[in-house]
Amino acid sequence: MSGHSKWHTIKHKKGAADAKRGKIFTRIIKELTVAARNGGGDPEMNPRLRTIVAEARSVNMPQDNIKRAIRRGTGEEEGVSYDEITYEAYGPGGVAIMIETLTDNKNRTVGEMRHTLTKYGGKLGDANSVARMFEKKSTISVEKGKIEEDTLMNAVLEAGADDMADQGHGWEIISAPDLHTAVLEAVKALGIEPVEAVVAMVPATTIRLTGKEAQQMLKLIDALDDNEDTKNVFSNADFDDKDIEASLA
Image (cartoon, rainbow, N blue to C red; front, side, top):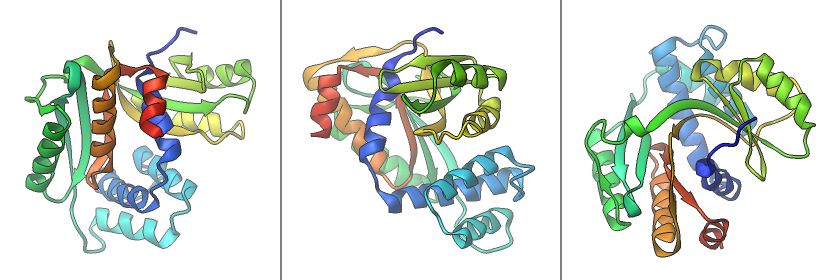
């Protein structure tokens, strides 16, 4: 099957090194609350909620925490209400950035995003300034060596996946957003736990950054990702492996 951009590489590598349990739990609780509010509290009837519950269990979140977050979303228990806001921005070298957030204070979040972007050579963009450069897709990463390529490919294609690309470190499975759960379940039915499974904003084209611009952009990604309100950061920046490794050193 066809190759795919390396846009996901830095997120994949950083995710493996970024074991911030508290931040992960906070994000998942917010997502559980929003998913339950928008689609109901029954995971069997709410595919988005079912996927997030599975993620919560994969990181050993206590069942009581999961249930409380869902009850807050359905209004059965008092709690903070979160809004989903996506910010569009530009980074070093003019790269496009999409920042997905879950926040209980819009003014605080936009102020922090603007400050972080400015600090690392970026700036906020207007609505729809960069969104046209991205397409929402399900992306599921599977480490190589876990299963034969043909077996994995046949299973995900049968479940409706569009593509399976060689990313060097593993396989990246691309699907339509509404097939995310079906393809993820097909992967797990093979006895495989994906490295990552997200509905992501995938760029149509990428911009290669090197040297100083690459390092500045990598620092910007880290800083945005570290914000408590950040759910996901996507960009159309592409990097040399040496720049990625230097940023993680």
